[in-house]
Image (cartoon, rainbow, N blue to C red):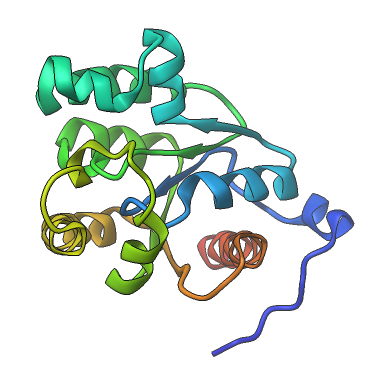
Length: 192
């Protein structure tokens, strides 16, 4: 496996990075944290779909799930995703379930490059262990629920991804650098 050297700011300016980058993956994969680093590294705006929903509604995702159910939340998610993906020069962290909708998958494919942040079940369980704001993990065995969600969603993550990056045992900045290098290679391959 190729060991990538850290990227410098001046190097990124010459890279052929796509205008919009959409991060998908399970809860705890690091989409928001890594997305912020990636946006800074590539001089792009960072947006988080879940945070945007919370900002617009004035309530938490958990409360939306409680009041409207998952289907109500998914409708809101699709509307916000459709709007955010029309922006230019962004890194967008999506919610873990965004890939469940064919409409959402088509929007992601059409409007940018999709990066799947993959993490193993131990990593996901560890990273979400103290988080009480994830409605799908509130009841029952957290690890078992994550396994069920991953079993359902991972084939969709993989099928939609232009790039797959593992986030296990790596710092968010190291992962962001790896994504930038992979996107540069992807562009070079497409233009060869």
